[in-house]
Image: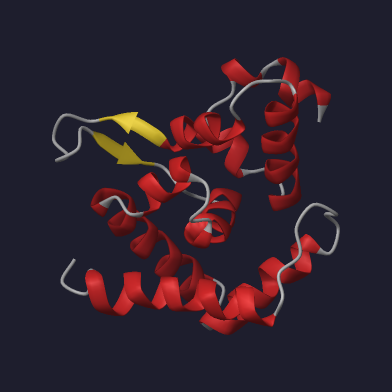
Length: 151
């Protein structure tokens, strides 16, 4: 992981998306502990300038980044994540990326969340219980079925 921390500014969203979920969470934690803003880094990692979008950005959330931001859907106490996960362009990209991931891997929403929970077994800093899983599932369902069903 030290390679990624030492070369963090040189790596792209694609390279980060190839890392396991626990590595992304670890990088965020290390950045926060080193007086850098790990949340801001992760958000800037997925944002790319695009003048054709309403907010001026398009979002790149492939691979492990989709799982990472799935966990951030309910982190209301962290204003930075709350701002991005409520963004209409983010939600549209998240919806299509998640549905593609579920289809490609023949997963239901529950089995996808169970996959994330299994990934987190190797990470001490975060535990997803039944209630948290329920809240995350409800947020995903809002994005997929309610707010942006016309996209």
